[in-house]
Image (cartoon, rainbow, N blue to C red; front, top):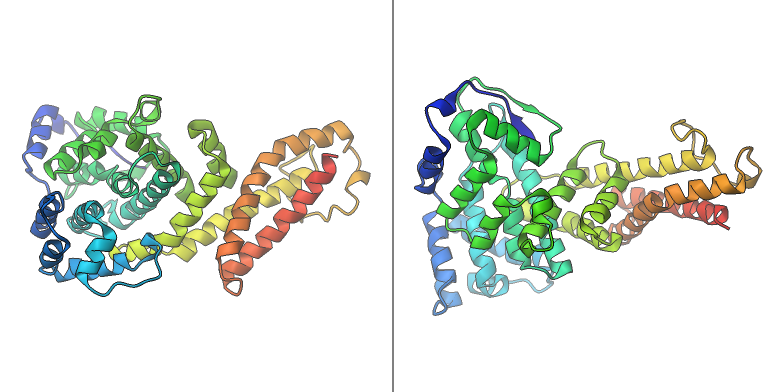
Length: 401
């Protein structure tokens, strides 16, 4: 995550309480769309009809177009298109519409592109992937409302943008990359500014009248967010934050996604596979509605490259268990039992070590090959990965017998 370098002694003049008070009263906060705020009010009114909401949305042409596109997108997994705002309202649902209005309006309050040291495009891209992972996890685990999980994931680090606006934008301070955990980042912010971006985010979302459950996610992270007594939405948001960071981290080991999902959250590999693929299927449609620049094919190709690299490392380990770092062409395994040094106990140890990562890559490759067009570049690559996975699985099976 982006981390902030120290900027003098600004907090000597403005204490934490004073800053938070300013945020709570809306000072220095972008103003959400009046139509979006009215949408929140009407969508929460039991006496409000779909026609009432459609009439309101019709006053904002941009919001109307985006609602229709969203209602017809893969996000709602439907084949029957809708052509009117009233039909779109019914499909999306009042609760979802309220959340959607807040999300779209919030996204529109900030600039895009790169402003000084802040890369807004990158921030929102990461936020969108996190939001889609949260939505998919919520639906599969049946622990909280999927659309509410989407917004919780989308807004989880929103305070970071506001902290930038308050203390850095227009100044001479630099922003640099740190391989910090979230806890380290928040501690660094508190040291430099007297408060952290999660505190800022909670104050801002409260001012914007976001649901209380989403506010709770701001203050819960790490072990506290996934404890047995933590709210379901906070738990899903923390899962999405952790997995989203691993998904988008360049150079990260592909099997580490599955290892962390199991270690930290007890997530079954099948659940994670379904979540990842659903995220990639939906991300382009939702990015278009939020006017975000996302290249799904490029992102998916990067993940496939990481999966293929994991297979290459497994192959190297199978061919030479004494030196798993040695780089070589993928072996054929036709005469594997005849290789020197590969006695039964060594083979068993190697098999145990590589089984889990191979299962992770194999499950992903099978799902990927099944959903991508076999004639597309991505589809062809997925089938290459699948074939290599199957070859390694057979070699592993021979080692284990």
